[in-house]
Length: 243
Image 1 (cartoon, rainbow, N blue to C red):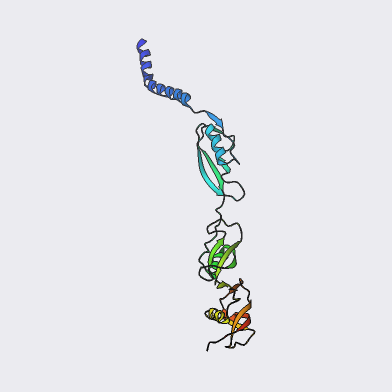
Image 2 (image 1 turned 90 degrees about the vertical axis):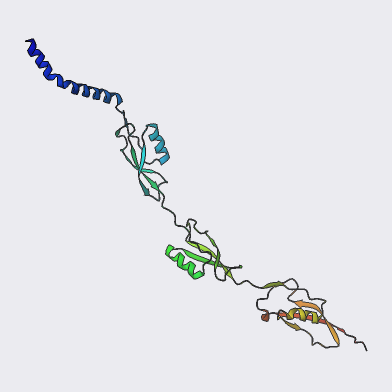
C-alpha cells in the first residue's frame, strides 16, 4: 500500500518545476505590474501645456503628425492617441498631431534689377511694383532700394521700388552785380550759357551789371546749358584811354 502511494506521488513530481515557475511569474507580475490611469484630454492645448500634463503622469510624448493650419495657433494639439479618458498604463507613449503655421512667402530681391526684370519676378507672386524715380548715383532705371526689404514676409500686394534716374547738374547761380560785362561773359562762356543785355556794347565804355535774372542764389539746372539765358541789366561808364 505504501509502495503504491509513493509511486503515485513520484508520478507528479515532474510538475513541481512548472508550478514553481508559474507561481514566481504571477507573484512578480503582480509585484511589478504597472498601474493604470485615465488618459488626460490634451485636445486644443498647446504642445508646452500638453507636455507638462503628460510629464506629471510620466507619459512620454511623440509627435506623430504636424499639420499646417492658418487659423489655429502654432503647436495646437488636434489629435491624440490614446483618446481622452481611455484607461492606459503608466509610462505609455502618447502620440500627438499638432498644427503649424504655413511658411509665409517672402519678398523677392529687386535691388539691382531693371523695371522689366522686377515686373517679371513679381507677376508670378501676384505682386504689383510701384516705382519712384529719384536722383541717385546708381545705374539708370535700376532699383537701388525697396520696401518691403528682400526676403521679408509678404504682408502687402505692393512692392515699392526706388529707381535711379539721371542726376541733374545743378548749381547756385552767382551774383554778377558790380562785375564787368567782360568778366561775366568769360565766366559763363565756359558753360556755353548765352547772355542777353539791354544795351549794345561800345568800346568807349566799360559796362557793369546792376541787375540780373536768374537772381543770385537761385538753384539752376545746367544739364542743358543751351536752354539757359542770363538776362543782365547794364550800366555803363566811359573808358578813358591814355595818349
